[in-house]
Length: 367
Ligand code: UD1
Image (cartoon, rainbow, N blue to C red; front, side, top):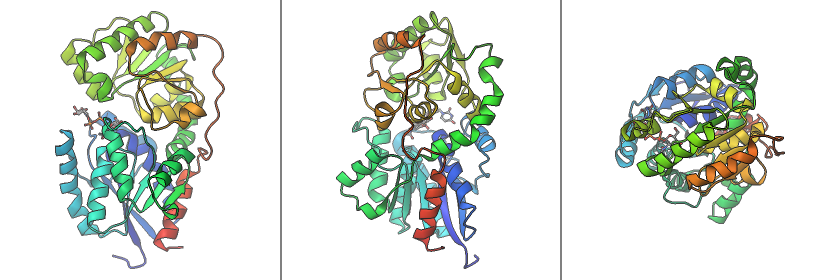
């Protein structure tokens, strides 16, 4: 390998990783001495959960696809680790970058640190303090073994500091997912996805649900679908369905809920287009809490807690708890009237990828 080039491994695995990695790779182009080698673990593999995001976000094709697929947590994590270890040994990178809080994030950071390769974690320090969430375990472990911790907001920095992480390792860089949102918003708006679906702007609700705590128990999912059916009596409800949720709906016979517009998972641009023009979102996603805050669109989150409290204190997010009975009382006041005022958090300005790239370059000593 060219001795003037420093190779780093960049890991993506699941849908929410792609929009976080894209601006980092784009910003690294300003540092030709750093060569990113993109590894896709294959945690998500369906065309509409993976491939479409590479196309729409302009991500380069992965240099390596580990093709691990779905499995139980232990088996999926172990498969990713087994497949990633030889890649690290072969490439001997100077650094491994992981993003977010999915099983791929955890698995690849463990492999790297055990092979003596420093880890950079993008989206470090977020804490729901709910250890029943698999993502919380992934966040805690990944941060504990990381050498560079990139935080999206000041509360994340405080969490890391209170856990004893030395300040020199922590970099407040803002939110790279919002870089992606700002870059693609004009193209998303041009798609006029709502109009193509026969809907006027601010006249529909958009729903996503996939957390095990909401969809894995049939009785709970049935109560959620009942609340959505009631909501659909007041406003059109669009619901692009995650494969995990679809499986549970099909096995529970809940697919035919009257009034709901159930859809296949959408690509990035169509989803952003719909989110931007929605009356409000109902979700249990982490990323959507942040994206609606950046867009100033109301967000109701069907969870008792959030690792992203800034979306509540500064943004448009409201936590409903985990009782589906809370959906209608929270949704009704949003059906008319002006949108709430929200502030976009500091550094969610579209420049986070550049900040991350500059810290990486300095850390790697290339400039
Ligand atoms: C994973 C992440 C979660 C993230 C979510 C975004 C973990 C622990 N969870 O959850 O944090 O919010 O991605 O989507 O890493 N499936 C398909 N096709 C796919 C992918 C999944 O059909 O391309 C189905 C499989 O039946 C699979 C199920 O969805 O068993 C769940 O997939 P998995 O990757 O285990 O977790 P997610 O629920 O997607």
